Image (cartoon, rainbow, N blue to C red; front, side, top):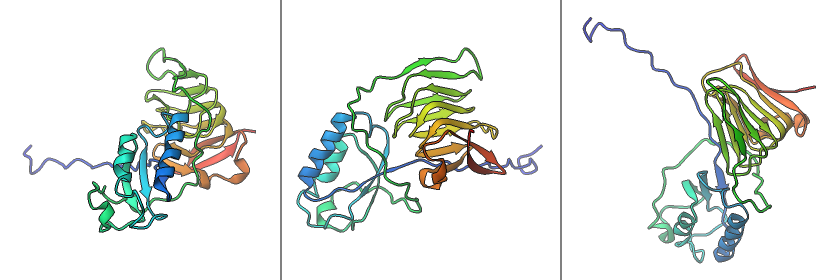
Length: 240
């Protein structure tokens, strides 16, 4: 069969949503950076690897220290994927490596920044015994940590902090409080579910369908709940 007569392959595409944090610096910038340093000292892994949008809407183009802000953030390991609320023609930002703009994102509410000291210690993990087996996490998953099991379930015998992420090819089971992000059905398992002893999730996703915190019924906030797909729609219901 020639190339001209061979059937063309079907191109498949699925959406995938990621939660970006928005940082809004305020004048005086020296003081704001000291506050950021204190936050990083309390939770060193919180900003690691996270996409950050820098919102300069609270600053003017002649704000003192503005020119040094972008390189100061890069030095602190803050990964900036977009800048908004400013004019690229401002002289103070003329030397910045201005990222490509992102549009259409929806606000997901205030993200809880951890106040407690964290040493970044990984939780104890019981590795799956074989393909499609569950990965068991014995203890809390802290802010900035990520647990993945693309071939099966993830079971957390503890809580998942804000800023943490659990990803599973199958279902996600959290016996404590789920404050972070839970992603189930990564391999196209539409029957996967997300179970939480206390539902306070930042984001829920199953097979590419997602729901952010503000879309979860407030009546379910803080209760035992499960998320599932029904007719290509992500729904959250109580476990009782």
